[in-house]
Image (cartoon, rainbow, N blue to C red; front, side, top):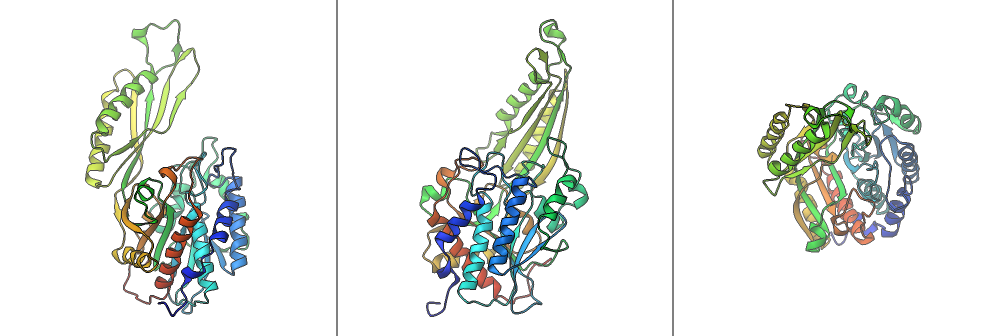
Length: 423
């Protein structure tokens, strides 16, 4: 390959970093992070920026009914399904500059490098920007990729509301109207392969001084909600024996869950949200609503822990009413061997230090793996910090990840094999 132009040779570190930093100004926080939640005014303005980038590079823009954006560079054979890459641009309320957005910026950089190298690919190549991966505003997340892959229906998603009572249906029109030059696209258009670049969101790559993680799969997850219902009463006059204190009952449940569900050190058990009603100092609480997030690589063990969680919650329904229900569940997925091999081969050719690894976090690539060959490219993030305003990565690592991405996209873009799992 030494006598031929490689797309990776045209990846521009300064251009990539400049775009990454500029995108981070949309929803920037005082602590250097990003608050750019799905379908917010900040996210809608960021979408307009992506439209500008697309026009500058000469890509064609598309949008579907849930608000996923696609930016396409045509191939020489219009009959072939596209190679797709990308991620998301929505964030947590106190998120960082790189989670999700790096995959989008790297996708633009990789395609621009292919163009700058003068390479004509047989297949189209597309940047995908999936809606509401995080689920921080509208829960659960992964809405865009799930709608595209047919995992959930649009009718299930549109009524979902945020904490202010605004629904996806209410918020979506502004996002659709903000990109009038994007052509409408139906769900389920064929995809030849999907490749997502992302920061690791963990400490492994940095600790082992590896530049790229060749991701072999994503661990499973069970997401639940628990509602404990008691009775409001006066904090000073109600005898202890007569109280139906929702906080007291919820505290017992939470303590028991942390003791039992975390028996296996590979289990990641989290209670990250808790809402208390009426949440005033001198009134006994009448309701506590909290979230549960359980993750494990072994899907069978994960389900066992979810069932145990439900049983533990039921044990504490004597004084207060306790309801536990699931809002999302996914088993572990394993990525396509040919795709992971292509990423490894690119790392070897570029002399980029890498390791194979399983993803502990969920990503849109999970949903795409149901409909096409899929893989992921991880790059390090400082101290493994993510979902945090202190999230950080180096320009060189972002560049090297984009180089691998560019060369794999080139390889896939010239693959005319039709014996693959396509939509």
